[in-house]
Image 1: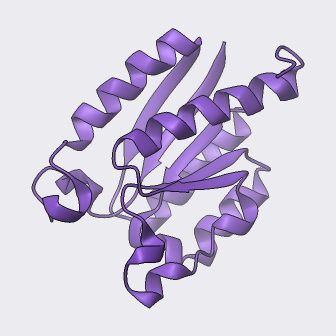
Image 2: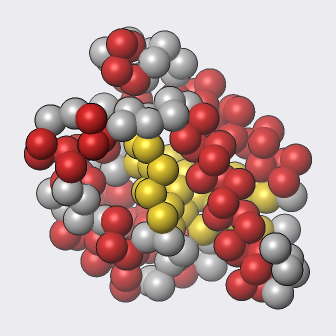
Length: 152
């Protein structure tokens, strides 16, 4: 069984309330529940965490990476500014996928640049809550391939 940590950054605890026209009406708890269930069907253990504090997110990344878990990271606004999160992923040589609910490239220009994407296996954005499920499917495949358990 592979392990995947889903790490969510600032303001994502307000999903369902915060700008539903942009982020949808589903709460973070509902997204996490769907991911745990989907992970079980994929044979993956899913651990979900959220913080509004950059240093806590760094710690979550260290913990996941050092344990060999894959990381699905929605760093939210830190995506565009945090060298610390980028360096944390690189430091523990984590397999990570960057995720966003909205299509960041269709939004304000400052959201078009990611400091995290260059150290991630890929970026998925713009599919609402399904973005997380797409990322989970992808990261499970990557982790299994690295373990030699999946030829696809």
